[in-house]
Amino acid sequence: LEPAAEPPPAAPAPETTTPAAKRPRRRRLGLLVRPVLLALALLALFLIVRAQPIDSIEQRYLNATEIFAELGAHLRLTLISTVCTIAIALPLGILLTRAGSRWARPIGLGLGNLGQAIPSIGLVVLLALWIGTGTTTAVTALVVYATLPVLRNTIVGLDGVDPTLVDAARGMGMTKTAILWRIELPLAVPVILAGIRTALVLTVASATLATFIDGGGLGGGLVAGIGLYRPLLSLTFGIVVAALALFADWLGLLAEEVLHPRGTQP
Image 1 (tube, rainbow, N blue to C red):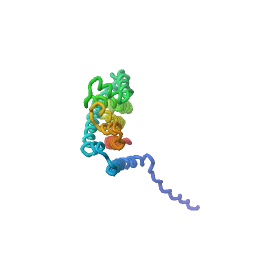
Image 2: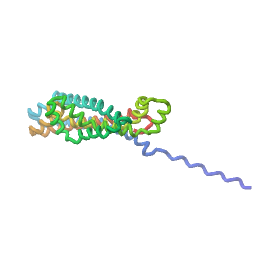
Image 3: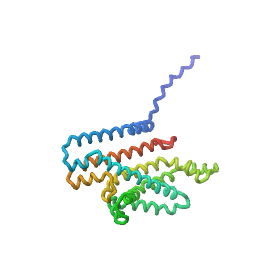
Image 4: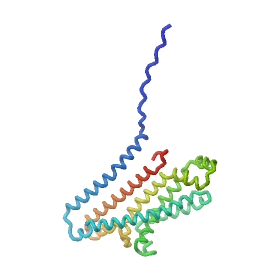
């Protein structure tokens, strides 16, 4: 009898680097690159402004004291408005996903849609006529305008939790509160954070309108550049606002990367 032929050697297993596995790596690389690009853009803007001859009117706005004062007021408006938006929209979104309150969901979403249906400048003017001018009115307008993304994403995130997980937790004897805090909210975090990131960018961009009702912010330089026919002012403050909005979006992406559940893809 002839000896049995030896089976051919097994081919080496191919590398299992899939596009899905490469995606988190690219995402982290993008998170590292974006602030560097923003810093380079602002540095280029600074050098361009320094190289331009400016008159006394432009000098009044294009100085470190004025820019940082308006930037500080803009950041204060954004921070206060975002905190108030989260404090209102997040608990309301949780409430509207509970069994006894689902009937009120169309009402809550309808009010949120109403806030975004009105143009932002119209909303600011209407509130100023009703409440008066100042920072309080500006914060109220920004909260009304930015509530919908947080509210909607909270509802979508909680509704997207697998019902079998909730049933399993209930079968283990967990209370409704424990299921909410230990099961539903951690799994809904990525969707909720996406809504907060959208609201934050909207707030940064819309806060420029606060200057029309004496609320401060970076809109002062923009309006002055348009009213005084100084394009350099409008360009400078417009780029600063755009960079601030992109930085806020980067912070939101960073929060999503850090706070998303470890067992899921960001």
